[in-house]
Amino acid sequence: MNDGASLQGLRVLVTRPAAQADALCHLLEARGATALRLPLQSIEPVRQTATAARALAQARAAEAWIFTSANAVRQARRIDSGVWPRSIALGAATAAVLRQLGCEVDLPDGAYSSEAVLALPALQDVGGRRIVIVTGEGGRDALESALMARGAELEVIAVYRRVNLPHDPQSAARMVEQADVAVITNGEALARLMALMPVGREDRLRRLPLVVPSHRVVEQAQRLGFLSTPRVPEQVTDAAYLHCLECWRAETDRDDRTS
Image (cartoon, rainbow, N blue to C red; front, side, top):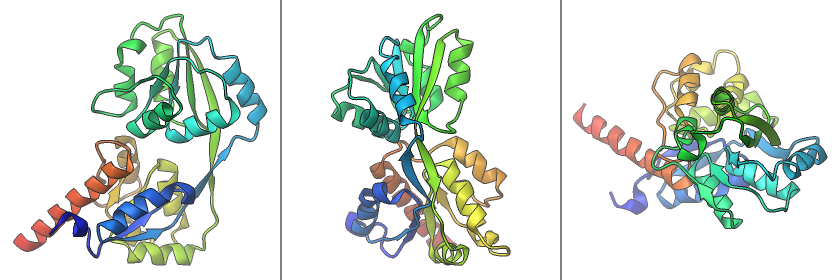
């Protein structure tokens, strides 16, 4: 099968927010897949944007700002147009947005995770140094806990929030039943999708193969009773999600031929 048809006939449920789903859906469709769009959340600024803007402005003397997502970068820039200190990115997509803004970025080699960020030389000797985490509301606290344990003067500034979108449960269940695989881009979206399932129709979702952004979401899926271990791309980028799906499809086809 040529690259242009590597996902021919595959039906992929894409739960990413509508404004951010186009690039991934176009990549999928260029490979012959059908993208089933079910945006579960929207990305919106925090309610107190003036408070967040003041916090960012007052944090310019920090040793570094750690951005946990591309959304964090975009929302921070909307409310703060000043010069930012040293930037550290949790992931290649986040680093790409920072570089588009002209920022110098520290990015782990290879692995993109909180653990990889914490291994960066710049974050080893942080005792008494001011570090800022720029993130969304309700983000994970692994970075926060580790940096505080190292003695950093830590501040967490939330600049965006995820808002669940209303969906008819029956319609959502029908989309799940049409899908061969789902791309879930955060743990909140996975929990939201499970909560949408009508009583008696959860099992179809639990049987659905998933591609998720991190091992933390893999663990969440296992706690929710998913039957197969979700795949995790090497990077949290559209191209990496596509490659992960192509590898899964090739392995599935090979297993079908040998069964």
